[in-house]
Image (cartoon, rainbow over all chains, first blue to last red; front, side, top):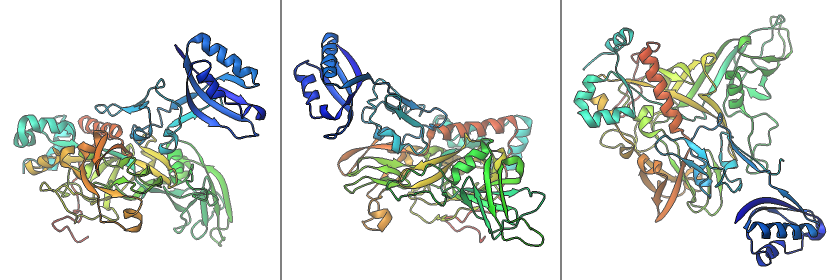
Length: 138
Length: 393
């Protein structure tokens, strides 16, 4: 089993295709939607974390491409800017996966990128502006 | 009295002074008892690093060849308005000031990316800012405008002067409503989604000197990475709140007005913040030494988070509208620092804006300065208004 994070870019005509359903039903993948911007008749964008057998994953993404949907690896990045972070802990309750956590002995806040789902909840709550998140290089 | 401040300073000069931080002293007292610890230890250092909105700085800006009278005119630093109601060359910028055209909360919640605190942080970082001034012109100050990049080298003086800092205890904020609210206590999620608090607790200066025995007007302090002074009680200083038997206030109470040479401060200890939906503010690092004059002072500095209580206040109705029956509960800083508190039958996660990490570093730096002999203690020249009656200032 492997996990890949990908961005699917939908042309307007593919927006009504039930892609997520197919990925689960036909290819047996576990799909976690990280971000979605889909509107009927317009271009759409879906950020997914997909888990499954590598062969199934490759077949699934090949199927997605046949619909005219572009598939890109998610060049996501989340960054805790060390020199701005004061380890105040305001972000801790906002982080749903405990990727942001504080050592309650040293009081140092840390970010575990493996646990981060790039939900962006930490961005507005950080008044020191120490958290930065970028999707697919933008 | 076990020792005087003059005796402590003599030991500092001789390199014999014994200093602990307000956290370290807890274990010393636990192990040796108050009496023995008071005999052994000369000074305990405290620290706090937290947003303090009533902060700002005044500058005296060197005149160009053709002089200008900003007083009665206008002055902006990086488009942030400064107060220009003084003499020709003196201006004051407040931490929360915003550019005239900033959208503020026009689209709620606003982002507040830039304001007075950012100007102060830029200057202490050694950067230049743009001064834009307008004047009406006089025979002695003929220039009508000034537009140039200035830094500390273009100022005769740059002074941090904060009318209210260092709050002795503070509210713990929650939101009982059904929508997210954006406050100076941070983003508060609906239905008790989170708890935000803001105090260094057992490291906090005034919680270690709850009855203002040693901290008063004239006390020399660590301020923003440099040295400063307590110059007056802070605004809203209110010693008359309910207290524990040991004297610790159970609500926001004492405050300090502080000032110091901004040119000697550092961006590590003065940091601009942008609170979404609320505004801009400045985090200020303050450390205050407490001379162990007697056992009573030692008893106070050994206070622990488990003995310090704060009120939980609803910021959706109670704080803004004065509706509701007062605090929902009282909790200790030990509970808050555990990561969760139980409130109305619910486990609620806690977060803070006051950095314990930084507060601890400040108490450590102050300890080091005293050990190295670069920081001597001062006696207060007047007491802050106290719970048991202070001086008539």
